[in-house]
Length: 319
Image 1: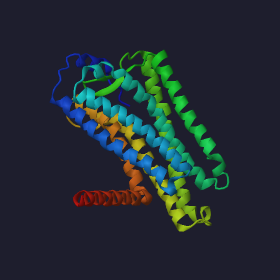
Image 2 (image 1 turned 180 degrees about the vertical axis):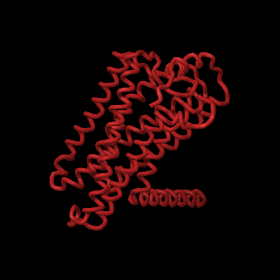
Image 3 (image 1 turned 180 degrees about the horizontal axis):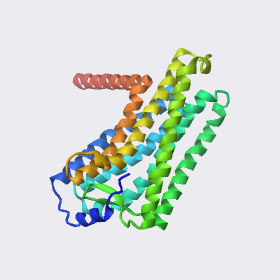
Image 4 (image 1 turned 120 degrees about the vertical axis):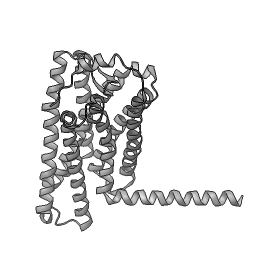
């Protein structure tokens, strides 16, 4: 793990002068978040409207994508207003954006874990699956995930003074008052909590896929071919999402030492802010690629919108 020298970053940041590099970094993240926002929004709407997604897994997908959508909107707003447009009042209150975003991180990880656990239970506990993932239990899981994450980071931010602010040098959010306690908490969280959770998610996803591939005839012998195919798609989706999230954690911590060149600012940027917000486009893209229901829904939506525009145009010409 690369522990970034926050003291050096803070000293170098004091000589900051707004330049075209800041506009470039701000525009790159703004574009990422703009695209990611609408893709995540499409997934949420699709989960509500596609009959096959009105299921426990669909509910968990809605929760996970709403969490990412909020994080995407928060980060995109800051980079557009503060970094690209250089609005001082936004930059002066960067800790609100940073603290709120960091609070969402364990919610995202917990949401991915619930989705992976859901697929694992669906393939191994066919008779008790609906009881474990009843609507009432799903609500409890989601509420606990949000509440635990909020309480934990409230303690870190308020009690341990780990205030996450923005630095122009590297265009990153990191701890401002990097006390020894705060630093140890962050390292412990990264190496134990986050790494353990992402590893567990990966193991669950691989186990689920192996069970479905090797024993799908026994697991879903009474189900139709379309149901089997959909279950395989769901399992493949969470596996690829888990792999992307898992390797992003390594990239975030180790990518700095792998990138060529001597400009530390861009090394920090591409391994932190840029790559983290890129996940907002990768995750919904994986959903679209692995779920034919979503692709068909998007095509139908596009065709209906096109026909509606044609009718409107004809009506306008006729009048």
